[in-house]
Image 1: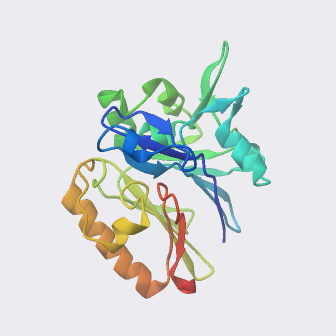
Image 2: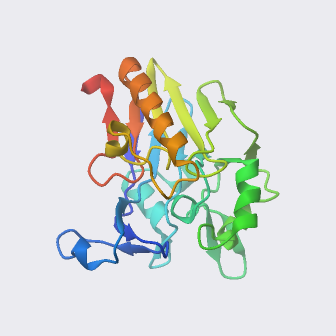
Length: 248
């Protein structure tokens, strides 16, 4: 399988839940509000023998009328129309902002025109119940009553090689994915497993729905991944987006 990180850049986020661009060469983290977190925003493409998979969709920012997600895909040599499946860990705005694209007179439409989107049914309902600032529901309307959206219930397997499971750790209906092909296993934990350092240390995050559970799950995944040579994808890691135990 081929992995392509689609970095949208580095940002800081504080209690306002606003993502502010950060350039390590010209910005000073100490000048940002106290408690600001430094994070990467990084969807991933995984190319398998069956699919071109997109794992989460980024912030949904546009530049010169082009969705950054689309531009990043094209920069990687992939036409947005070639993506076949979109796997959504959860619908917080930094992971689901690129789910849809808005065009004048048309409203929001799914941004990947030929892809099937996979999201937890309860996560979609919760997003509309909870709303702003964690969820931007106007961007998520296109997921409702759409034939190209598969609403999942709890855990299971997609097309015999993509396992998914609800954790209820970072958020109540957050899901994680294991992609298995040709004796290789790729793990995408979304915000349950966002950065390498959180896997290596017993760390309880205040921003998680169930911090202790998230910490314990990270420990379990890391131990199993080391034993079975998993490849981990870290959505918010500035320096280590991909960690491959088979090469360590």
